[in-house]
Image (cartoon, rainbow, N blue to C red):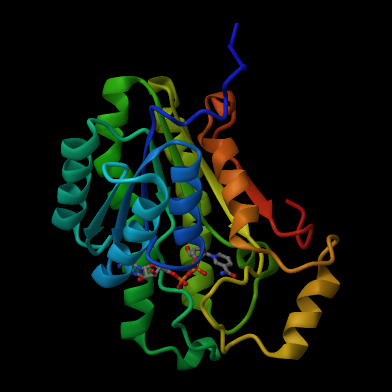
Length: 260
Ligand SMILES: NC(=O)c1ccc[n+]([C@@H]2O[C@H](COP(=O)([O-])OP(=O)(O)OC[C@H]3O[C@@H](n4cnc5c(N)ncnc54)[C@H](O)[C@@H]3O)[C@@H](O)[C@H]2O)c1
């Protein structure tokens, strides 16, 4: 029988979060620290990674967070980031593949997307997810416990136009989640995807006009804008011991915009 008395206790858990220097990832880092976990921030932007680590240290003291500057699309940098996390905290229990080329993307018809940009999006949003999972799996396998949470997007379900590379990359994340779940389940490792809707963070989104903002609300069952906390709550559940029987799933957290 599973003991469900403390499924939300992350005191002995170590979470590695990519792209946690801002936005949704920053919310994950701060929220998991608040839930008692030790946190490794793996982020391209070193200054932002350090700033989020400093916020966490100010709240929880030293020794609970490390900031690692790394490109998730660089295999050796990812290996080193996971090794640094293990050196600092002894293990990796939860990996959240959140880093992506996203808020900096210019929306345009797919025929106008420069091929270089297409490749960059695939490299970070697809290769990055695979590389982080590949580096974490042996560490998790050793403990016969692991949680991999991949951040996809509701744009896959909607087929949202004007960033085809991004949509393709996030659809790949759903497929990888299912296949990885089958490969890793026997080792006690679950793999799930979260599909956020339009989520408003501290980062201004020039691509969303006021008209689009009200259209977004019109499509949702729940009539308020999504925040990083909505995703944090879902991630805490998927990362919990209580979610050990949930794997390979793609869970939309979007106020009821899409039904899968
Ligand atoms: N905000 C939304 O509306 C929304 C909706 C659906 C899905 N998502 C997904 O949620 C995740 C977070 O979204 P966000 O709004 O916080 O995005 P964001 O663009 O604000 O933040 C992305 C973070 O990833 C980092 N990053 C980018 N490339 C990297 C690399 N190569 N290596 C390491 N770090 C890198 C960036 O520096 C940044 O800190 C992304 O995967 C995004 O695709 C967001």
